Length: 131
View: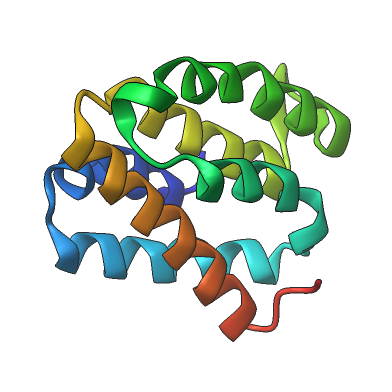
């Protein structure tokens, strides 16, 4: 696994707890990685749209959990198997978002997750990510 991805995965608890410096730093690293590895925004637009529609954590818990199989589906659809592991930009983003979902415990961590996802896509676009 790429060092950037490993670092981002390790920082998720801090990001969801509200560390905005880590959020911005890791969103930029991941957004740049995804843009450089040809992730197209259309590959994940539906997931992002679903997250943006979610208003409050208490009302969205089930929808949030149901994102995990959707993420697995798009990762399988857009990734490729290599050495027993699904690789590619979509599987990487799926792994990061799934880890985030696993760590969401309340309204604050939920809002920080939404901010992180939005920041990843903003940096993806900034670094030339395709629509």
